Amino acid sequence: MIRFEGIHKSYPVHGREVVALHPLDLTIQAGEVFGIVGHSGAGKSTLLRLINGLETPSGGTLTVDGQALGTLDGDGLRRLRRRVGMIFQHFNLLSARTVLDNIAFPLRLAGVSKAQARARAQDLLVRVGLEAHRDKYPAQLSGGQKQRVGVARALATEPKILLCDEATSALDPQTTASVLQLLDGINRELGLTIVLITHEMDVVRRVCDRVAVLDAGHLVESGPVAEVFLHPQHPTTRRFVAESEAIDEGALQEDIAHVAGRLLRLTFTGEDTWQPLLGRVARETGIDYTILAGRIDRIKRLPYGQLTLAVTGAQSDEALRRFAQAGVHVEELSR
Ligand code: ADP
Ligand code: MG
Image (cartoon, rainbow, N blue to C red; front, side, top):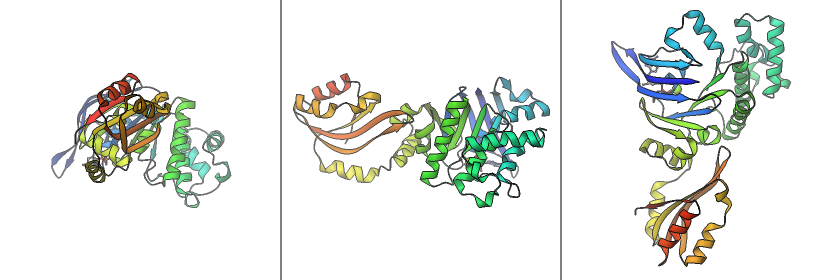
């Protein structure tokens, strides 16, 4: 659906070039929820704005929905933008228009009659659960409601792609969860391709299928969320995961100093998460273990567990073998 080939972007600032994105290759498949995570200034918004032609690349080829962006004239670009909706951190609603008219606005711009635009907006209001608020103004809505209006407005022109620029960053955790649920539903029911940029790995964990990590304009890691989240390779990715897991590395190192044995990290995914494996292997091999850190949760709909253990006992090699045999990913950590 979206293909970046050698795409890079610099901005002229006071007569010199500031590099926002170094040459990168990236493919986003139709129907997936793709996350891009990175710190402030990493180049996330630039990357997103290239997709709907709000920014022009300094070089490389960008193909969106089968069309090379560089070859489009003004008309072609406008048609493409109707197939690409966008939502924003600060909602960008029109304060002097009602909820219904905010949602109808892109259709009016596209030349749809007022009656038709409002009828379509009414359907979208229902989809995002705001029927009761149709005649209110944005100032009368909560942050979560405003973002729902943003989503409905973005869907008005029936886009194939939805771009989300830090769409939940101004919302509290509970509202974030409900907006992410809405996006997940839209992705599943309408088959919309969603590209979501965020500085929070937890947002990626909840809704994304695949993820790319941007660090100072470099794409440093990408892959299925389960892989990147459970086995991060790049130091920047590791930091994002540790932040989202609320792991205090210093405290963990202190705890580790207090316990004897081999340090292991076991990762269970899917059905394995629910097997009573740890106790069984301990009984069978006579090992003992201390749990130092752990989390049982879900990556989108995939259950997973990740435990850091200190293991003692003569049969620890055999225990490791049995864990691995049962499909558990076993890593030995150094002290
Ligand atoms: P992010 O969304 O990850 O915070 P941005 O894509 O907004 O990052 O910015 C990436 C880099 O490009 C930053 O160094 C930023 O200052 C610079 N930048 C972004 N937009 C412009 C612009 N219009 N003019 C000049 N520099 C810009
Ligand atoms: Mg940004």
